Amino acid sequence: MQAATVLAAVRTVHFGAVIVLFGQFAYAWAVAPHREAPPAFRAMTAWSAVLIVATGIAWLALEAIGMSGLPPGEALAPGTLAVVVAQTLFGRVWLVRMALAAAIAVALWRLAGSPRDERHGATFTCASILSLLLLLSLAPSGHAAGGRGVDGALRLCADGLHLLCAGAWLGALVPLIAVLRPESQGDDAARLAATRRFSTLGIASVAAILLSGIVNAAYTVDDFSTILDTRYGELLVTKVAVFAVIVGFAAVNRMVLMPRAGLRALQRNAIAECVLGFCIIAIVGELGITIPAAHHH
Image 1 (cartoon, rainbow, N blue to C red):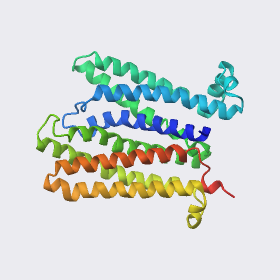
Image 2: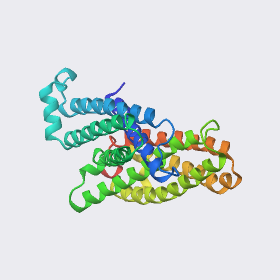
Image 3: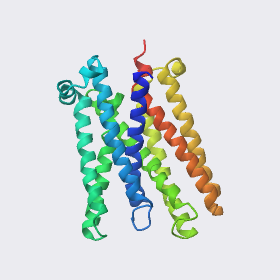
Image 4: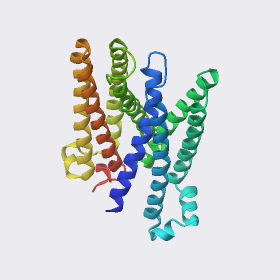
């Protein structure tokens, strides 16, 4: 397997784990009626944290091998890794990301051992903020990190907004699927109310995703008439097409299924949306290491 394929896979799992982690808190704050944690909160957050750390370490190792051009044994030596971490933008951002992951792990450990009192609420809020910062810290891991000055700041802001809204929408979709299960706690009215709140969150997220996506494309694609002539363009078009299908599912949910209280159909569509959403994450995992169409000569 080629190194680029392995790196894309590691990035995909890392991005997915960060989004699932953030989505647990996004659901609690924006969808749950009383800001309670969603079903399987402890298991989902714990596994997400483990995957974030594991893939974070693998990502650093792969970048060290790629940046140094040395054999793996030499590239992964402490001295080489120290140079990558201390003297590259990727390394410094990676260090911040791992520090955030460690802080989240501590907060989750405290949540697991604390009763639902004021301390629990403060810890939950702290973990929510940390998960948000961890999600935003992914912005400098893509092509936006190559920008300079005002343009660079604009690209990072657009990427951050893109990640935030994608994380809120796709991440909160995971616990919503669990809530829509017939055997989950709560009555049908409560499930429909949660679906309506999620739909409102989704509409706002889609609008912001479209806006930030247009900004990103303006910097990475020069000529849209020849976009399919590059691998980056092919991936970007595929990403947009899958996103359009997801929006179609969301529109059916809001305009057809919710008025009819079709909970089973809502759950099936939510699962389809989720699968397609993670397909987009896989595309993003490769887009970030593919030369943008605007850089081809």
